[in-house]
Amino acid sequence: MSSNLTSSLGVKEAERPGDDVQRRGRTDAVRAAAVRRVSHHLVGRTVLLGGLSLWISIAVLNNATDRTTNSFYLSQMTSMAAIHSDTSSGSGLLWRAIDLPWVGPALLYFVIVLQLCTAVLLLRAAVLHLQVLFGRKVSSDVANQAATIALSAFVGIWLFFMTGGFWFGYWLHMGAFQQVHMTLLIIGISSLIYLASTEPYLRNIS
Image 1 (cartoon, rainbow, N blue to C red):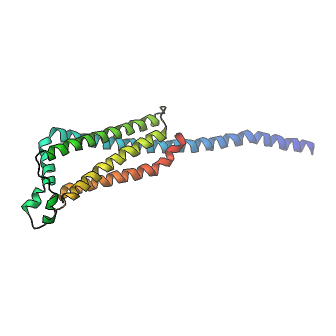
Image 2 (image 1 turned 90 degrees about the vertical axis):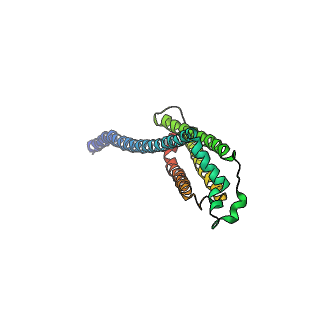
Image 3 (image 1 turned 30 degrees about the vertical axis):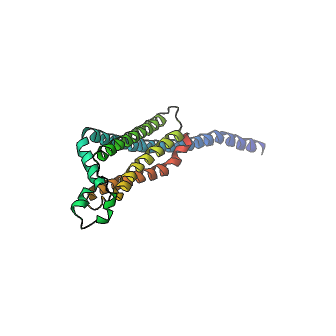
């Protein structure tokens, strides 16, 4: 009886290290899967933020190097020239027209500043996400806040464009511009939704 009990205890003691190894193995596997998931989300966020920063930087470059074209279209919108030419629609809005030669260029410079600031914010957020990805001393909360601010600025630009354009009735004769602004607004809102959906995965690495 005594030898059987001792033998039994010996077996249990022999099994415990093995159980610990298995538990550690399972824990390590779960941790590795979580790390991969977080890394994938960090890469996705970085690509999104960097890509939008690059896109809006090109928009800044286009606006800065082709000021004549862009000033023309802004002046067309604020002066409501197309509605003046075709009074069959929108004539009741003409009191809003601003037909001053300096308005278009001034508005263009304002847009360039807004876009440039947004490009910098997006780039900063992308760099912070890269630093988190490579284990630098940057909190994921800081990176997430930077991304939220940058994407909010991105959304704000296109809301500004759409609100201003709507005031001057640009949907009547400049529908293509409105469609572009609407598409970019949807991209910005979708990006914020993606940001919110992936934020919980980053909390564990703060």
